[in-house]
Image (cartoon, rainbow, N blue to C red; front, side, top):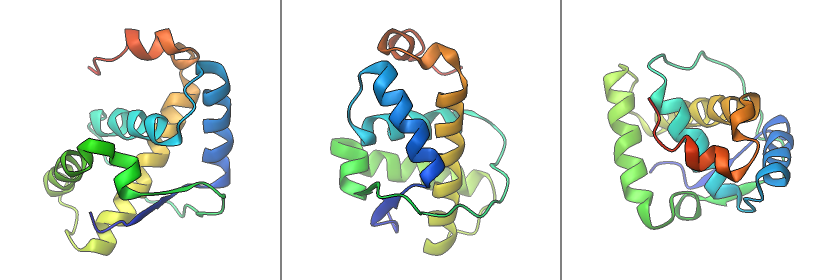
Length: 126
């Protein structure tokens, strides 16, 4: 992945803090993976937006993806290709940030994700 370090905005950090508290899921990377998958399940392209990486939360790509980092990379690149996104490293990194932040917003905004049972019960994204 051209993105070596995943950084999130302060607003997204605050949302993740609430989700960590509510769900008991303590790892940023686990919540961020869920967020990415939720956004990728949405057929629309996230709207362009300036997202500041102004929080103290950051993780290496390998930490974000864990043992499946290569799989997340391939899935994401395929989505970019299908969406007609320029496949340059810079463009892919920007779209990753847009998808991640949109997904965090989805997690935070949907009350069914307020506990770990909500995550388990909604593990199949339709």
